[in-house]
Image (cartoon, rainbow, N blue to C red):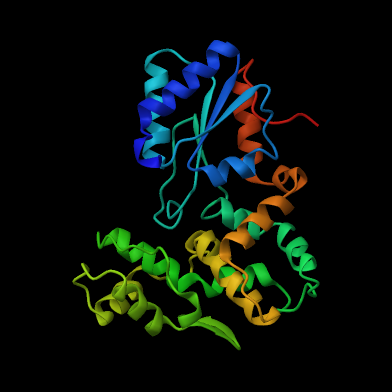
Amino acid sequence: MRRFIDAYSVANTVRMSRTRNRKSSALLVEGSKDVRVFRNVVDENACELVSAEGKDNATGALNLLRRSNHKGVLVVLDSDFLRIDGQQVIDPDVLTTDLHDLEAMLLSSPAIDKLLREYDLSLHVFGPNLAELLARSAMPLGYLRLASLRSNLRLDFKDLDFEKFVRKNPVTLDTAQLIRDLLTRNQHCRASEQDLVNLVAKVAHPSHDCWQVSCGHDMTSLLAELLSDKLNREIPAYTVERQLRLSYHPVDFASTRLCAAIKAWEDQNPPYSILVRA
């Protein structure tokens, strides 16, 4: 069904919500998993929460709604590599995540401690700061994603076999094995292993914040691999992400820059509201 969703269908979803509640605001997010996170903090009696199934659909729908004079529409997007590239969004109705994406924000919150407790594991079972360990260890994969974008390689990173390239002691990614696995799954790519090594070296820099480089989905896949090894049973990445979403509390969100930005947007766009009031 996702392939049938475009900016027009997203905009029409918002228009239909206005027939039920003329003063309802709308929050457009990139995907259905983002919707599940925001349901913890959004007042759905006052705000229509819509999965746009992609950045272009979200911003396209916003522009269509503006043309038809529909106010009170806010878009929240993953930052991805915006900050690494020195870019920023200047649209007052488009906000971005504090870190690389929403999953990274979940991992940087106390939700990760709750997840470990759910498995009866010590909070320091993988070291003094598991979240930081995941963000730093996943950087090679983040840089491969960035290199693919900048060089227009169109690499598909889905379904990578993390078991092949995750090393547990110490926790690292075997970059050579990662690149081999990635190229095996992308037969169309004309770049060689050495080409990718060189491209990663070009985009990497010691000043980069690991939380802006590393993709949250890569970090949850890495965590799933570590948990599976520690517990001696398979813990899928989708289970880890679900548990993080369930463990994420409105108090965790309240301390983020994104929350502050949404509140500022509400102040500038009365009577439209987004967040649940304490």
